Image (tube, rainbow, N blue to C red; front, side, top):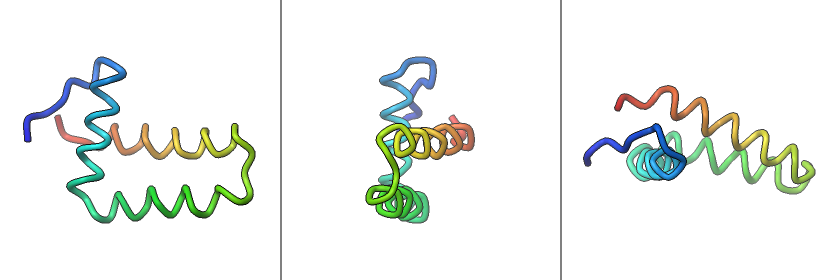
Length: 63
C-alpha cells in the first residue's frame, strides 16, 4: 500500500486506519483502550486517551 501524507488531517486519519488494518496488535490495543474506557471515562477523557494512542501510533509509522 502506498504511504499516506501525514501533513493533512485526512492523510493522518487514513494512515492510522491503514495501519490498524495491517497490524493486528495495534488493532487489539486500540480496541482495548476503547472498551476499557467507554464505561468509565467522560467524553473528554475518552477522546484524550484515544488521541494519545493515535498520535503515538502515527509517530511510529514509517512513511
